[in-house]
Image 1: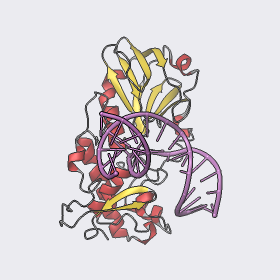
Image 2: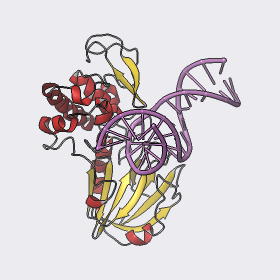
Image 3: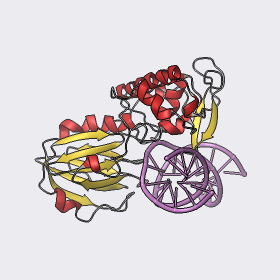
Image 4: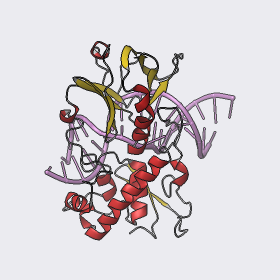
Amino acid sequence: MPELPEVETTRRGLESLVVGKSIADLTIREPRLRWPVAPDLRARLLGHRIAALRRRGKYLLMDFTGGSLLVHLGMSGTLRYLPEAAAPRAHDHVDFHLAPEGWLRFNDPRRFGSLQYCADPAQHRLLRHLGPEPLDAGFDADYLVSACRGRRVAIKQHLMNGTIVAGIGNIYANEALFLAGIRPRRQAGRIGRERLAVLVTAIKSVLNDALGHGGTTLRDFVGGDGRPGYFKLSLNVYDRPEEPCPRCAHPIRKQVVGQRASYYCPRCQR
DNA sequence: AAAGACACCTGGGAGC
DNA sequence: TGCTCCCAGGTGTCTT
């Protein structure tokens, strides 16, 4: 589910509801996530105030004085705010009881998500090697040209590699490559500067568009307020095999690249 | 160093 | 209706 736009949608939806509140209690019903939830997490958070809610790539960072909780939503995770207590449903693995009021509920059917506390998120092993934020000014043509130089990997896999650029997953890699007219399998190092510059613009454009629609809900994504995202309606190629290309009407092709389903227009993308 | 395969897990949809 | 099989928004780890 959650790529950068979905995580950012979650962050924006929750920020004003949780920042400034304290952790009154923490209920861990299922600690077996991607990595086990630390047994001392409750003790660490109890009574501490949420100073900020940030995002880095696909990670949410809940800042406290002295440390941060890293939240990853994996493939199927959601983090929702509940104004009142509600009985837990399936896969409601962790509840944050907030003070003076409210609850935060982490739900994740596939349990690929994670909750990890650390003193310094910038130095955390999962964040330390992340590439630039794609919507930051530092992610530009110069950067992508140098990051692609000499690389033989497929450009789509390259974009989905978080150490190259953070937060781009399968949906938005497909969509950005469509907008840029580049085939998913093209070797990263064999794309000229001009086309990479177009790709940078396409990435920023598709991510900003998706943010404007509250992200993409394929099946189960909901933001912090429980509402789905509507960018699915704007997807040009993702999960549309054999449908006509919106630009030229040629049938969209599905092809596995790096073990991930990829979709492109063989006429518009070269 | 880089690229590829595999692992983790549940649920939904397709096909029979 | 019910069974089996395949696939899914991610990414760390192990193997070539």
